[in-house]
Image (cartoon, rainbow, N blue to C red; front, side):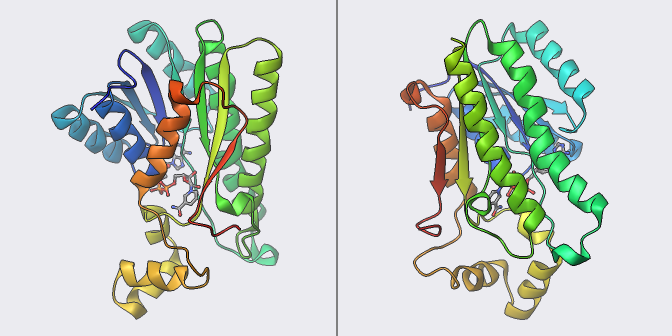
Length: 261
Ligand code: NAI
């Protein structure tokens, strides 16, 4: 296998689970030293252990992405141990299903804080860390940032904001001669624990008998489309993070089997 990321240092948030974990595994397999950041310590340690056992180099970083002091400390740790950062993947995120008229303001704030403020804070400090040597930032938005998701307006709004934030920062960097690319992936449904934590999904699994049956039934509302595996999203993230995408910045890369068409 080609080691596209040999000698590179990467930081992945949301690395304890789902898309972040798949991305961390693949980056390590392709030669990167990967900092796996998440607020879930046990989950992150399990992923780091697995990477070290059979894939490559990884370190655990306990991080709440809404905590700027935590980001500052983590970037200082990376600078001290590895000299520089080449890749940031902002995958940490939360979803919350609620009718807008029933949603608590605190829940709205929580979704925006993790999904949008977290991406802002990571990007801000990554630019400071990468601005001399260059680098690549990949943010994980969602098809729900492009196509309205009724019953998840806060989530949809946060993800739409992530797309436009990425474009604005990409243009800002390109226009100022800062050699940092900023791109966004927009997956539709992906088979991850994000779904199993949602009450309506648990009910669906209980009534249909398995998670696979629940994923299938949700896909049926979008003909031709199916739920993605986390690795299918990770592969697109690695492409955007790699030198193969050297001329690509400010992109929303939709990964949805045609769902948003
Ligand atoms: P997941 O629930 O499997 O993983 C999310 C991770 O983020 C968890 O490990 C969680 O501990 C971490 N996290 C949550 N809040 C955090 C915080 N404040 N600080 C640090 N870590 C935090 O979910 P999944 O599916 O892997 O989600 C990854 C990204 O993909 C999210 O941004 C999500 O919105 C996005 N996405 C997911 C889709 C899906 O169908 N699963 C579809 C489209 C986008």
